Amino acid sequence: MAKGRALARATETGLHGVAGGVPDAGTPDLDRLIHERIRLGIVSALAVNDSLTFNDLKRLLRTTDGNLSVHARKLEDAGYLTCAKSFDGRIPRTEYRISPTGRDALERYLDHMEALIHATRRR
Amino acid sequence: MRPLRPVPDEPPALHERAIDNLRFIRETMESATSFTAVSGLGEISMGVIALGAAALAARQPNVERWLAVWIGAAVLAFVSCALLVARKARTAHLPLLAGPGRKAVLSFAPPIITGALLTAILSRAGTVEAIPGLWLLLYGTGVITGGAFSVRVLPVMGFCFMLLGALALVAPGEWQNPLMALGFGGLHLGFGAVIARRYGG
Image (cartoon, rainbow over all chains, first blue to last red; front, side, top):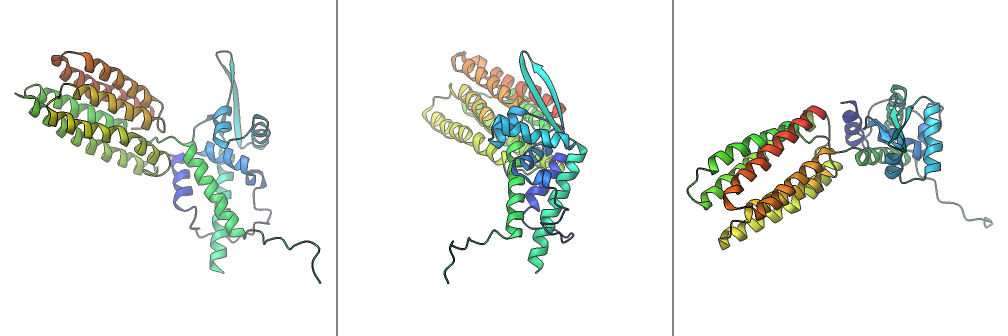
């Protein structure tokens, strides 16, 4: 249900803004860790799926193995993702899940962006 | 005094970048999610309607009335399934006709429209023997193509429909109604139960 709400929220309110604080994009409030596009994509994709494999994310974000691996590692180190490695027959399989910390970070990031839009429109 | 380098264009305003970021998040979520609002209960309702239609159609004195029973059942089943899908989407806060939902509908529709047109042409020409096989084949095609944007079990169901459709095209006339019952009734009930259990209703 949480993944449905995440998508509904991004879909319905994404371009209209909501009431909230008036942050500045340059303030330390902005989570630089998920502000980067590939990392933002990883967190967003995992927010609407129970889990995604490395290959799912690579196909979805149209990126390279090395690039995805580096960014996923940063998110994992920050505790935003959990990573499980296993074997599907003889093929290694890496599966990612978003953690509650990662979901909170995405919510805060959405709040930040929405508040920014709202503040600009009030000027 | 002329500047040595041209003054760069102004960077995009903060709110424009914020809008762009939100759009990116929304598009990533839409492309990352399957259309999980497909309703197992909707499939089950279609199966029940199809089994009722098969029993009723078997008693009809001629092929025109047999066809009319199945067409009526198809309309009823479509409405029933659409209502249950809409209810599930609303309950789960999933967009119905955005992203994967829209792609699933757009992929499912062409084979179904083709089937409707061919049904009209074949029944007018009086060659209705091929209609059950055609319906099963084209419905299966639609389920496979639409199911590519939805839960993984749907393309498997579509393939089963296509197998039954191929069988119906070569099977004798008395097999057609049981094959329709097995496809539109049995497959919908079986796969509907799987979808309802695995994907929340």
